Length: 109
Length: 279
Image (cartoon, rainbow over all chains, first blue to last red):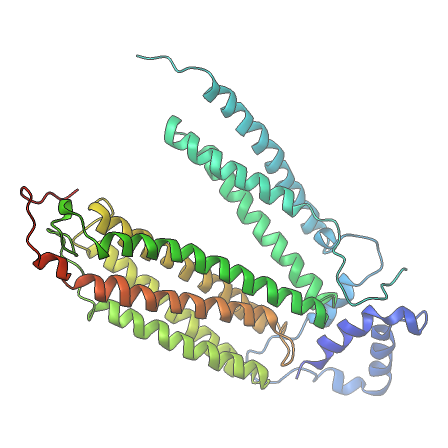
């Protein structure tokens, strides 16, 4: 069962109520202290299993850096956002251009 | 760092509602410009913008739920209500097309020959490919339920297999329907029969494609360990949508394919008119 995803996500929400250190950091610290060998066999050993990268993502997206979620993932996010906004503004202008053309009477041949 | 003392989700400011609205504007105005001025640029731009918006908006929802833990029980309840209301609105959308079909087929006009199917229309045999399509979708309903139980029981590999099977069945339906469209002896331009048939089944096919895409995203998320045995609402929403698509097909099959292919009793009544003309 993937209790780590659920528990870590929920606990991190309320971590400040218990003090400065987040639960996520405390749990990770304890794990590394007590079970160093087991950590490397934490995922299933069957042939093509993907390692669970959700805890890593949880750490990135819960970092207290004040970034909104749509650019919190890094440079890729910012580039995609800029491309999207460029298309939005350019597209708005282009639609107004066509509105202008469509507003004028067409020459009849 | 300020933390909330309630269980609700106050979302971060997001640009996607704006980009989505502009995308819708470009799609609609682009459609008008394409029809009147034969330029597809605006339309294409709108499509790209809409796809970018959908990708980033839903990506952000996954981040908020799976990575940030914002989808607490009350928030999830709201998401459930939202999905149910959306599906209900889609039910009403299809209701309109069924209304149109029954309006024309229950009282076929003299121009159609006073019968349904109209004179000159060879309907598809409901016991050939349409029946296979029914079996395919019903089977996919079983496999998606199997996938749900697998997720709830923590059987990762089984969940991936049954979800993949569901998606493959969805693709098979789409492929079969595409073949039927190609081989059909009538077109959308063939009077009200063609209109009702292709608009109703066409929108249904579009919803099958949307549902298959939604399930495919869920498959990807399942592979990436996003779902837990207790919390997998994204998958449940996809499964609800898929069952809705299945039910719409059943209504389409019974109404348009089966009942709609039998000669109506009106045909046996004497009709005092000139030679029937296909409108």
